[in-house]
Length: 262
Image (cartoon, rainbow, N blue to C red; front, top):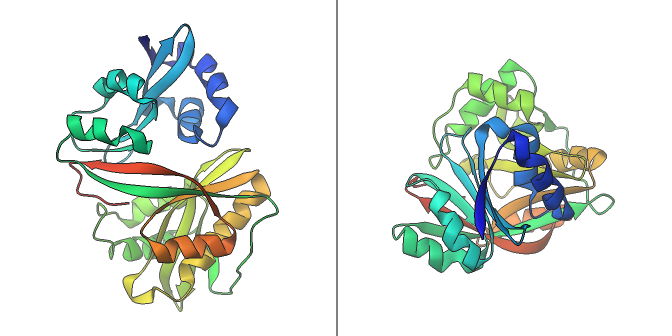
């Protein structure tokens, strides 16, 4: 086994290999194709065959790491993760290895869910619309200020987000109470994320409306929409199932020093 750093000069064969399973490798494929300047990847090869990889994405408030391989390969690739203060996403069978390397980690299990074109149920409301303006960004910043488990943001950052990320919100009067967006858009798959509802507006179906709206746009432009939901977040899982999402697997979301939760 040998480890290779993936850069612009040698990324195309890796992308081609990963494209055999767009669902599993969606983050790596997207980062290598569209955001390589923020992606640090090391790939493991054995007998000239790609055997796994670790990818650190650096454009967020904290590094986000994807470790995708078997346990034997992971013992090599884990040496290329950051030392502390990052989130790592990996298969469940790598938990013991991660715990041995980072004994103070906190981990959560997430359901990986998807819905295909023609399978989604649509939930529409006049309260729901796409976020596009600077005023919408200001409302989004106000909503996110109620979220204590994420770094603080502002209207400028939120405007940059909705300019790049198709985002839908539910409004009660002038107040944005729930939103959902897509942070990856490719012809094969859109990844849905950032779903959040104001604590005082939960259990009213608003997350279903916002997620349904962005899912509808996703399936007009891609074959599949996918998302992650914490396994024990039963209201979220039920909301996604109503829209048509179905569980296809599980992943670990591991916090190493960030004090964040999925």
